Length: 447
Image (cartoon, rainbow, N blue to C red; front, side, top):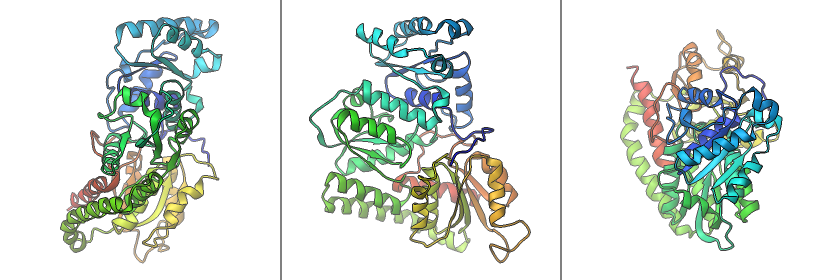
């Protein structure tokens, strides 16, 4: 379902997503071929929406840019790009330089590949990606960059390592908790005996990315983000992929681990052992908070707002693991009608049996109206007294909505402008413990 609403958007443009993705890769230097101001606009938006994610080595305001002007639009900007690439290589140390295009060069048809070929002929590690903002949102930018890596940088290998995998689907910046999420996912997969190329963590290197062509499987922790990149790895390197919903909590993580193990033929005994150990450890922590949870009545009705990764994952966790009652799930990603059943399948198969109404909406002002259609103000249509006690799990754009219905609120999904995020993550067993802490701490703070 598409939506034309653009005020207070919930995603970067394709260039923004590509810039954040590229600057998160180890040893990679982005070079924007774009109009003046594109990089700065992306960076200032980045500050207020990604948990105050900084520029890194050479992202944000430090990212090199051709800053093309009117004369470049009229006569073409390739000479200016050539000059910029050459000066960037001379001044900024990097293992790989990635040219990212903005809207203007893409519209006028600048052939960046001609510049790329020129520098590659000189033995320079330069590749290009057409990432004009009109090509999609920030998630599309992620896919475009990783597809370019697969097609133009990753070394082909006929020999595949049986227990080596690529991990995709967590989008830097669009997921403010990407660092922590990737680390938690990587740690669990390594305990299954796998060698994991996760692209963006401190344990990844440019060499490991370049040699990712000998992996035997691409693991997607998303059914929507990273799919085109996974297909690029399959087409260019013969690496199959498996899609999985983003795992939050023990129930979803067990499903994820068993799916991966089945694809890689990991012995069932090894998988069972890991799941039993992690589940036991998880509940050792949960049982210590259970007294307060029950005695102080911390169960809540919930509204969940997030992208196609977070909304279903958070809803499943709230219902099946936390024991809350999610009544409404709002998906903020623009998805096709054909893809909607894939999202709804998660909430239609909750083991708790909760009935969750699903809507697709990018406009934050409309979320309130969807809620009141479901539970009209001043009526007793939903509950005997009111929608209370209630909790809204979403982005910082839902704070006003939460206040209006008298609900507590935690920012988890993009944009994240009222929290500072470093290595926190909500994926898997450990991540869900952090999520419980954060949710219940909001409630406890009201006492």
